[in-house]
View 1 (cartoon, rainbow, N blue to C red):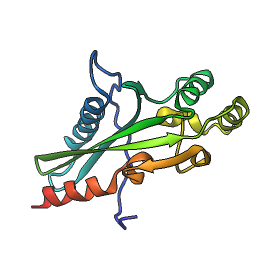
View 2: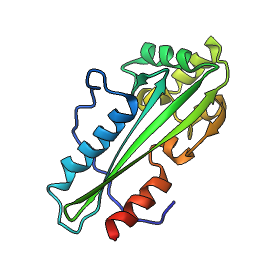
View 3: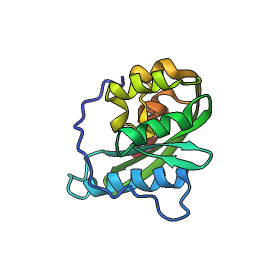
Length: 169
């Protein structure tokens, strides 16, 4: 959307929440860890972006489901409810690091078992935080979004632009 050229390189970072860690603190830590894991091996003028997204239901962290049954349980938790999507972003360049984040409230419609089975059958939930992707088939389950839509997709562009400006100044 920004017209930038980039490479996507997965960072090997342990994404396990620390004891007592809030959902917001988790995405902040993981975004920074992902950016720093890759930034060390790059030229000093390279711009490295790390990001992490989780879903938060009443303070419970929903990452990526481990299997189909886990995805079903997550979707049942989200059914008919508001939940929060937190996305942390870290930008590192030339020894300077900046961090930002977004939180978006997302409301799901009530899901019945047939809808959950249909969606799980698409395979889509297995690699998504909270077992759904707004940009995919699960978009039909979302009745409202309050906040950054791009943050729910995994990279809040308003936050990213602000961080890139801060790094450049």
